[in-house]
Image 1 (tube, rainbow, N blue to C red):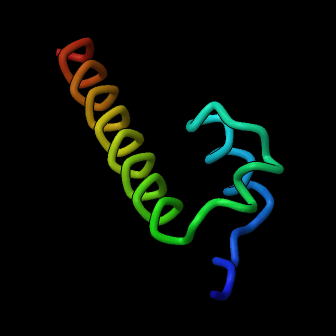
Image 2: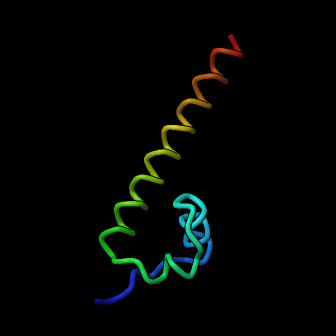
Length: 60
C-alpha cells in the first residue's frame, strides 16, 4: 500500500493531535490516518467558528 503524501507541517500537527510520536505516525495504516485527518480538520473548523462567534458578540 502506498503512503499518503503528507507535508512535514501536516505530519507534525497530526502527530501532536493524536499524541503519538512522529515515527509511529509514518507507519500507521492509511485508513486510520485519513480518519484522523478528517477529525482534526473538523475540530479546527469548529474552533475557528467558535472564535468568530465570540469576536462578533464582543464587537456588539
